[in-house]
Length: 275
Image (cartoon, rainbow, N blue to C red; front, side, top):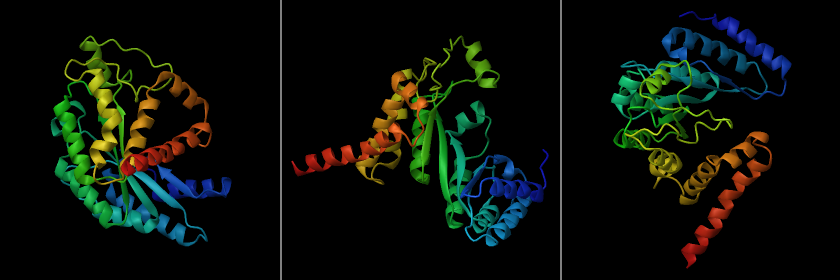
């Protein structure tokens, strides 16, 4: 694995700030940073000095790959000092069997829990990315995904329905199993189940997709907030709604609609409480 020098990457940060003077946040799409923690700590040190020289320090985010039996606390502390507000972690599945046998990710649930604890101790927010509907996954496996997210309680716990993209190993697995793949013309393959897995039927996959936030954060976050997420995911999975969504930015009509859902739910929730 080859890395650009930390100073070389910092030059790109300078270039971005010159080209976009109103920039306030930069996200680094580089989960390989944990493959060389010495590099990551050095880079964070440069960003810390860079931010100290600015009248308006930048906010940073990054995605991180968890490693088996390796602590990341020193890297997290360096990132926090540099101005990183959050990290994104691929939990993918709470089932160690699914992660190791299907996804080839060999970190344990204990490794995940330790990473969450270390990130929070360093003052970082931490978000989790999860999958549902993997070939070979069962509803019992996914219950473990719910459990690990409830145990870690990420700032945001995001869930996508698995879709096998051509050229990947799991796409080959689906072809070998005789699974007929229908192309998603609206680019909503992460919102709707289509594999028809006997071990994990489409209706169950979509059920978990819609109720995931409720199952993870029930008792931890307000009920209206969780119901808003359920309604939003239900709408997002609808083909016509998805096409409409793709035509607009998050600051357009649909952004207003999504925010309105919260107040609609609050209104009816409070009304039912009074009754």
